[in-house]
Length: 394
Image 1 (cartoon, rainbow, N blue to C red):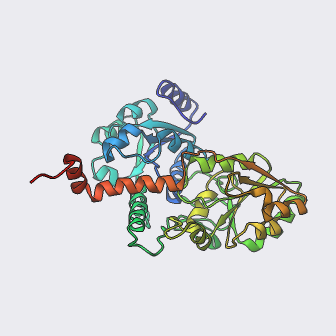
Image 2 (image 1 turned 90 degrees about the horizontal axis):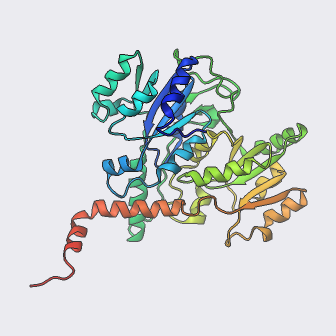
Image 3 (image 1 turned 120 degrees about the vertical axis):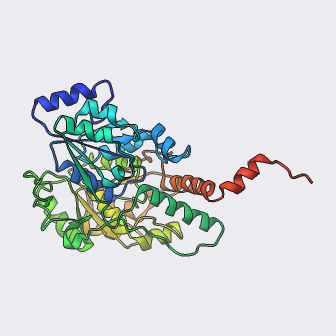
């Protein structure tokens, strides 16, 4: 159980303290999550034994940003970050008043953005309480490039608005990463090889994070054949799945976590920017291909990620020879009649299908909602007048 209700959290944390566990607590909305969020949470985890994440409640977010927010319900936001192995627990919080939850948790470390204290979102009494029992506050800077969920919402919405009025004809991609998988860096966190520990500085205990399976590995397509043969020689059952993973939400995580349950190793194939643009049209993808791959690598259920630049998945199947190809079943894809189905039968594998795991959550729906919010912001004066008057009189 990762979610902690207000009824049990105090006893749970008291027991952790008694057992000598060091608790780290941080707070965030995590409305549209990206690799920077994952790196932030992993860094937080490195300061202690148990990471508890305060997910801003719907009510609190609406009070801060307006009735149209958040884009995604609190339960789905919490569920998504719970798929990170380095997140131990979640709890819903009022972002403007975290003192009640601090009194129940008594974190050894409060990990947050320094800007929250400078903007007075974090209160002096909160800091005073943490210091009163010997707790420590870690204020981190916004890493560069820093992209907030709010900025993504605005970019997504502006794109949709411009598309609707046929003013915007180019592509917009948001590069949310600082990493480069060929240089073995992850959102600014560097490691020499996958099996070695990340260097978090002097505060880090002996955390062999890669050895503890906190990461999948982003690989070049040319490595698929070698990896496939090696895994099969070890008796491993390989599952292949594919998805754009653009504007990631809990439904994506549920789907790929389900895929992993059918085998020992999950290889996730992510279509390139070029392929998604051809399939979905101008303005897509929203998130750059490497940033999409990097975020998926943070989830414990993904073992390998490959970015591919083919119209079909068949070249990936040919190189990898998976035992199972796990894919979504929808009216449009007719998977049983596809080249992928024929190829899987030829190599002795099989296709397993599943419906979308969250039909009400989709990138397209998120874009439309964000656009509606942005229209209200941009044209508020005009819309307010339109609502006042149903007709004009002389």
